[in-house]
Structures are given as C-alpha cells and as structure tokens.
Image (cartoon, rainbow, N blue to C red; front, side):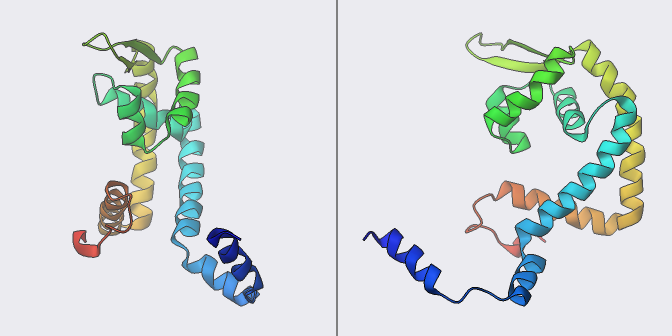
Length: 170
C-alpha cells in the first residue's frame, strides 16, 4: 500500500468531526469566508453594472485593458489571477461584442488584447455606475477599513505561496 493510500485510510478511520466542529471550521475558514464575501460583492456590482449592460467580470476586463495599451494573454491572466482558459472564456463574449480585439504585439511574435473604441465607449458608460457602486461600498465599510482591506487583499495576491505570507505588510 502506498504512503498516500495509508494516509487516506488513516484519515478515514479517524473520528468524523461533529456538526459544531464543521460549523466552527466554516466560520474560521479563510477560503470559505473570502469566497462568500466575494460572491456578495460580485452580486452587488453585477446588479449595478447591469445598467450598463456589463457584469463585474466584464467591467474588470475592460477597465484593466483601458488602463493599458493592451496586454498579452499571459500577462493579463497573471494580473487578474486567472488561468488562461478562464481568461479566454471571459474574453470571447467581449470580442464578439467588439469591445476587445486580439492584435499582434510590437515584436510580432506574440499577440495582445486591446480595448477597441466600442469597448472604450462601453467603459465610459459603465465607469460612472462603478464609481457610484464603489462609493456605496466605501460608505458601508468606512474608508479606513476599506483601505486596510484592499491593502491586505493585494498582499494576498502578491504572495500566492502562503508559506511566504507574513503579517509584516499591515
């Protein structure tokens, strides 16, 4: 029997956690709570940005591309912390709408994604709606708490290997 199989077998024979243990684990689980909060925030921004015909995911892609002169897929995927397949799946509808285009990069060996004029127009409509949504979130959380949260979230993104993660950036 392999060591992995022995570990799985050993875990199966351990006492299963109680409902109270599972509840406590859920309430203290970073992944569970971040995903739950992410869904709540995403639902709010989606409701607001729907007025401009966008989802929060599409708006994120448009404003990221709008802040640059275009990005390669690998660079964009890394920036947004998405795998390449998910990024392409999210870009495809924007390309079909004419909001983004895939063009040769300066070195002609690679491709980059750029915001088109139609995408820029969509961003111009959506941006004031996003600003209102952002102001509502800021008011609900408080500016100082929001700044601390954003600093911490950015620290998490920068340090994806949690063995290197430290509280020193607070």
